[in-house]
Length: 222
Image 1 (cartoon, rainbow, N blue to C red):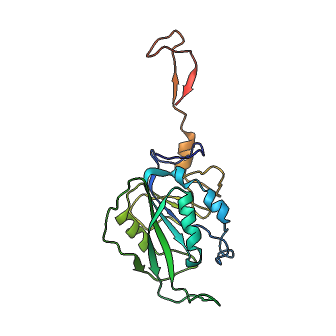
Image 2 (cartoon, rainbow, N blue to C red; image 1 turned 180 degrees about the vertical axis):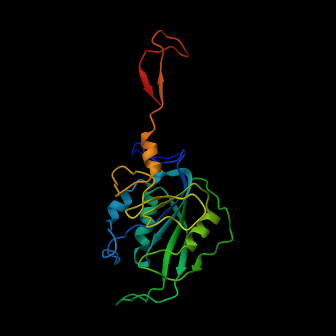
């Protein structure tokens, strides 16, 4: 079940998401011209642990430069990094005075609780072409669905996943399927609207003491 103290999260499935994919808008990685970035402190503050099931998988994208920080973020969310999955690109990126030319990006596979792999045949790398800035390859969804169980959630999504599975999404550029307290996004899907429109389940004790266990006539929210 979800853990943490962020209160009610409209759109959250019972028990939480078994698998969460996150592509954070890391700061100082060249994304400022393309989307709104976040500080490391703000990324770490995301209540990912409250969105996840007790036994869950996390897939966390990071650049090579921020690998140490990504490990820290995963641990802060309550997960243990198990393996890096390296995206080997078909073109060379930029290098630096103290850096080799970049041709890879890392997707960290993390777990918490008891969440075994659905498939043990996935190696620690895959090939896929580069498209627009920061867009991750569609191949990621087939890999994740082969290894990890649903229900699935993608955080910082730019579009609906290229998948036949019913992924939930959240981010600035999509109609988000969950509402995270303290992290507003521009608009939400009907899933959130329906969840927020549902009346709270209540239990009214019989003022005369009828029913099981007696009562005090007060309405109790479950």
